[in-house]
Image (cartoon, rainbow, N blue to C red):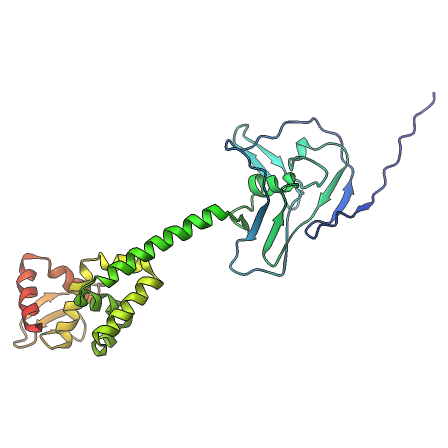
Amino acid sequence: MATTQKPKVTEEYVNTNDIEVQDYIEVVAKPKTIEVKLPKNNWEIKDRTYIIADNFSPLTYTLQCKHTLRYPLLWFDKETGNQEELRYATNQNSPLVKDQKGQVTLGHVLFENGTLFVPKEKQNLQKLLSIYHPGLGAKYYEFDATGEAEDDLDYLELEVEAMNAAFDMDIDIAEAIVRVEVGSRVNKMSSKEIKRDLLLLARRNPSLFLELANDDNVPLRNLAIRATEAGIIKLSQDQRTFHWGENDRKLMTVPFDENPYSAMAAFFKTDEGIQIFKSIEKKLK
């Protein structure tokens, strides 16, 4: 009985002229074709850019793009509850192994200087990086110009809000906020210097500035510090008790493991502390 000789398949290198992709041929069995399930939102065909998520950007970084027993690369399908093998093949329409058929040309995904540009013609690579790859959000992220613009706009609005608040702020409150940043050095600063540092803080860190501006304890803590520096009240060496400076009468005990001036600020809000606060305020004027 005559036997039919199967044609031999040889490996050959393919030049795609793409910087980020180096291809080679691998022979695989022909599986059953299954339609790729994309996210519920509409997939937009466009050029996409991907950026390494680390703070440093290596000159080159090769992203794993093929599942192996030693280095698994899987995508979990929430609808079916199955894990699907991933593989980037430049001659296939899907990065899911179960959807690929015939010979596949495997590609290596290479980030250069921390970035990777993928044109809209390479939909299989885009879908691997934007939908299926488990490294998305951990090892790299997709650059979103619209999202970046929205974030920049939010930050600019926050900065404008902080700058406007700084311009209109009373000098006493401004001193209290600047003291948080520079400490006792604020005592030697002029009102213009305080205002300048206040505006710089509002521009450099608007969220922190607004948090301090809305914190009622900041001016109260500043008052306690000023009163201590003026000798109106005294803080013991162990920083556990406050006393009147003129007669050494005890005012309050600082709770364990709490900042003494924050504790005094909280004390000023009590019925007993309000009277002491008003007395200190008069003596500082």
